[in-house]
Length: 72
Image (cartoon, rainbow, N blue to C red):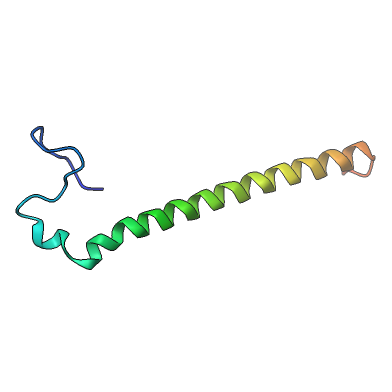
């Protein structure tokens, strides 16, 4: 996301003296909030996909046990 940092960079400090004007902008500060929103969206998608897989597997098993499943 930030590129390759040199060996003498401080951990957690991305903005140096050259990037100080960029780091103080509201758009740069908003990137953290957008990252969190994207992470939450990805987590919600993962949970919904897992729920779908479990429900589909359960429905398939119930239909097979009741003998109304399709013949493969």
